[in-house]
Image 1 (cartoon, rainbow, N blue to C red):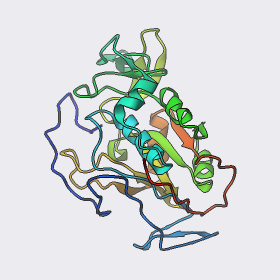
Image 2: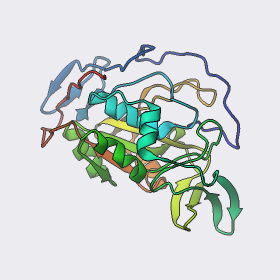
Image 3: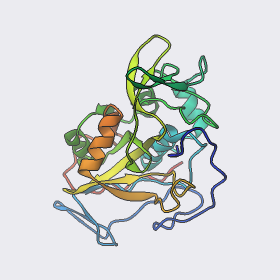
Image 4: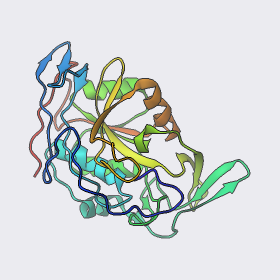
Length: 270
């Protein structure tokens, strides 16, 4: 999802390469230069307490499918190349109402579908289209990946220390947001953001912050956006909280416990 607002369909973006030199097809894995029980050093000199080489691809499935693109990253890293249609069939698509917004007495309000159980909105054109981690959870369980909700820094670090990845709701580029309430047809109110809703994957951390896999890549809202970038903890936790601390920690199949700092070499997708 892009950061543009109000509604406007982005123009077709140019095919750009990030610093990672992403290939046009298939997942890309960044290999560490050195690893130890104390951490991971990458070829460019970056150091992390834990770093999981996450799969990547160039661009999202559609304009507003970021939750499914982030899920693809997690699944592909652990050996499953699962396309958009297959993911959507698992989650479900609530088309009973097309999300719309207005300014209410206490701030912005979005009226949409039941995003606790399904995806809501036109993923081609509606900037408000989205879902939640609760609705996405069945995708990971479908492929027998140990998955659980993570709500804080400790949960994120614990997941990464075990060789896992964290699927999470964020804002585009981790920028400031307009606090918003999503109201489902049943009247359930959920905290969210207005025009820059996004989903990404946390793939590593150190004492300064986290490293993010974001397959949105360069767009008209930010031509400099990389597919992998670092975010300071303070900024990260603020954005995480704005999205109701909505994260899913996903571990490799059969994982019980791994030492901090270990890099897990994922199986190739497919």
